[in-house]
Amino acid sequence: MALLTDALEGLAGLPQPAVLAVTGALTLAECTLGVGFIAPGESALLLAATTVTSVSRFLVMWLVVSVCAVAGDSIGYFLGRRYGDRLRDSKVVRKLGQEHWDAAGALLRRRGAWAVFFARFMPVVRTLVPASAGASKLEYRRFLPASIAGAVSWSALHIGIGSAAGASAKYIESVFNGAMWGLMGVAVVVGVLVVLRRRRKAARAAVEPRELEEVA
Image 1 (cartoon, rainbow, N blue to C red):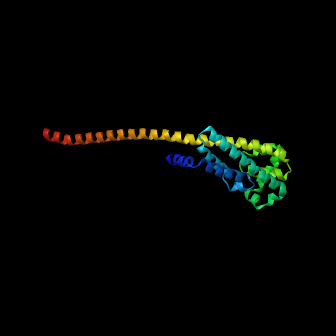
Image 2: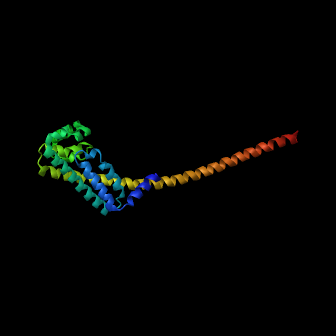
């Protein structure tokens, strides 16, 4: 537990602009077609969010991540608009899984622009929905509001989870350390009692032969 909190404190000690820049870049990369398979945007966001210790930091990270997520979605959308369904047979989509491309298309057919919002919370599929939306000729004026709503909700949720996790880790460590000191104290007392008991037994064992010799 101490190693975890040390790592979190080390991350918190980094310049906040650097944390924001890396987090924003990874978020944009994950939301862009296919790159999400390589860039751990969601994991990076959760980890970076452990540095959020105030409302101002929350708001700044929320803004940066939301803007980068929407930008990544838009890049994916225009790639889909440019290349259409040919993307399904691209190397990137084959690596991600063509079934995910098909799932993204089916979701768009059922939900329309709402699919862009819901897909934000679905691993892998969220990387492909923007491009699939562009390929299906969904109007950008419908795509963009759904993308913004999804990005804002997704980023707020994950930043909140990461921030709470960082605070919880420190609290758990403090409780754990207190418990450890208590257990060590109990162990010392038990050890002393065991030693005293053994010494008493040894003393009695030494006295008994002497008493027998005196009686004889």
